Amino acid sequence: MPSKKTLGLVLSGGGYRGPAHVGVLQALEEHKIKPDYISGTSAGAIVGALYASGCSISKIMEFWEKESLFQFSFFTFAKPGLVDTEKMADILTKYIEVETFEQLKCKLFVAATDIINAKVRFFNEGPLIRPIIASASFPLVFTPTEHDGNFFLDGGIVNNFPLEPIKLFCDVSLGVNISPMRTNIGVKDLDGYLEVIQRVYELGSDADTQSKMILCDFLICPHELTEYGTFDRGNVEKIFEIGYNYANKIIDKLKAKL
Image (cartoon, rainbow, N blue to C red; front, side, top):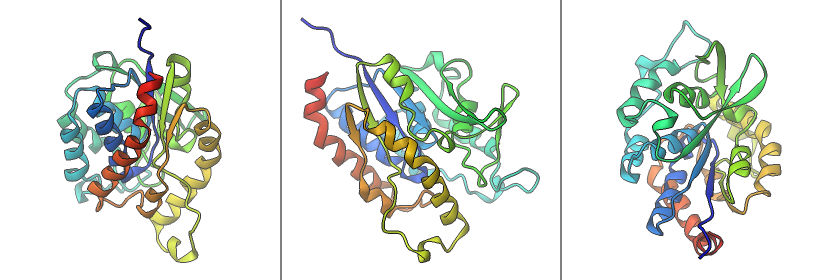
């Protein structure tokens, strides 16, 4: 009897579109499919870490439904950014009970941007929380995160679709991109600070993401997610359902491949 192939899951960044990743995981669980490796950036790193630490789907959804990083007490005027990412640690430790990558239930890679050395760094060992915070430190909104003597920002700056570790270690790759490029955008859609930052982020990451999505064995990239903003917290259930429904479209082929 042939051995089961290893499955690697790529989870892109995408801010509050993160529940789409959770919808994909729900569909996989219903069919008793568990990823052996997860590689995530930003929102994908958060979802990947929560899942790999043993959180249930309902617990991960609780994170997206109840937690906000834009609380008044989180704002800072003493650091380069609007929101102090150090505050994120208090939130994450309420959900993640393990302290290191080695204690996780599956292998996890977290991508963050080293802004001093101008390159992506993949974390997969040692302390867990700070690399997650680093990966989710969206530029100009969140303050840079210091770790191991370097400063890090959102992994999506240079790698919003961190396929590399999955291709290296896994037989089958499933990529989930929750930041598809908006094509029907107009000037009226860029009338705020956060909207402009989101557009710059999309433009900077799209070419790299496109070149790697085609290398995945299976890909989920719902265009409907362009209707929801990176910083829009109001549509958690709808976004979850989009990820869930798209995952169910490819689930039979994925099972056959595995």
